[in-house]
Structures are given as C-alpha cells and as structure tokens.
Amino acid sequence: MNKTALQTKDLYKIYQVGDQKVEALRGVNLSVEEGKFIALTGTSGSGKSTLMHCLGGLDMPTSGEVIIDGVNLCACREKQLAKVRSEKIGFVFQNFSLLDELSVRENIALPMMLAGKKPDREYLEKLMDQLGILERQDHTPTQLSGGQQQRVAIARALVNNPAVILCDEPTGNLDQKTSGEVMELLHQVHQEFHKTCLIVTHDMHVAEGADYILEMEDGLIK
Image (cartoon, rainbow, N blue to C red):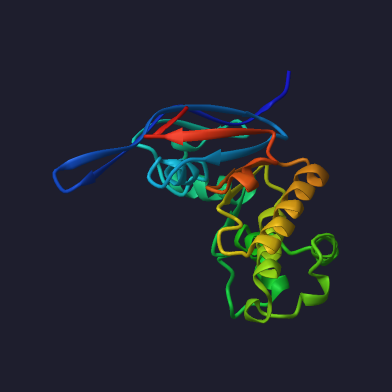
C-alpha cells in the first residue's frame, strides 16, 4: 500500500466579507499518494488558490485538517508550522518570488539558511547543474530570463528535500515555448527526485501531463 503524502479532511475556509460569509472551501476531502503528479484546475473563484494556500500552511482553514507527510498542519503552533513548511513543503509561485539583491546561488540556498542549516556547496552545485543554471549561479534574478528565474525557483523548492512540491500557476507568466520547457523540467524533477507534485493551473495543456486532474467548482473537488 502506497504512503499518503498529502491529505485533507472536511476542509472548510469561510471568509467574512462585510455582512456576508463567503465559503471558499466547502468540505474538501483529498488524498494524494506519495510520488504522484497532480493537476488542480478550476475557474477563477472556484477555491483552488485557497486550497493551495491551506495545503502549504500559508493560510489556516476555518475547520478540518491538512496532513502533509503524516503531520497535521492544523494542530501545529506557529513555530512548528514554520519548521514543517521549511522541511516538508517546497513552493513554486507564478511570480517566482526571488530576491533581486541575492545571487542565484543565494536565492536557492535561502530556505536552508532560514532553517538554520549550513548550505552544502556540492549539493547546491549538483542541483543547479541538473536544472541547467550552474553557469548563472553568480547572476541576480534581474539578469535572467523568465524561464531561468523559474528554474531557480524550482531549485529553491527542492533544496530542503521536501516531501511535497506545490506549484501555483508555475507557467502563468511565461510564453508558450518557455511554459513547455518549465513543465518538462517539473516532470523531470518529479521523476528524478521522486517528489509528490501538485500544480494549480487554469491551462489544460499544462494539466494534461499529470497522473490525474482534479477540478474544483464552488469550493469543492468535483
């Protein structure tokens, strides 16, 4: 029996907007086996970004549970939650979220330093080489193309060897050719590093390469 890498139980997220209560998530139950590559699709406002933020511990649900690699995020205190986010979850965002004042190498190593770990130069160089950015390690993000910046973001997501990689519209700011290259890279990462990957996307071309596609509508997975 395969291990469950990511799971939600009766997940609700309710926002108060003026006098109105908005149910962004309405009892989401989700279970993803270790090593799977999953695409999460849905129209704007369907709840997919809210679900992604709850899965990553970036936002807390109103009720329910989020379990990542056996740890219930909803039962964690803030300090423990930050540690779990750092060690068990890698993030890849649409806008790359790189720091312009840091070099490529420093951006990639940042999660290790924030976790109090000493960056392993040999490991970092191997990671950069595998992702095709080793020769750019001393450049800053502003000196890179969009595709190269996303490669740096993927390397940063992998640097602490997390159990789960969460990608929020990873090709949203890229042209079609570069989007294809980034998706090839993510599939390569999935296979070579044996990571569980969940990608939020509105692009069905991106979703089609996943092991399976989940569609959200009105705060629920269809």
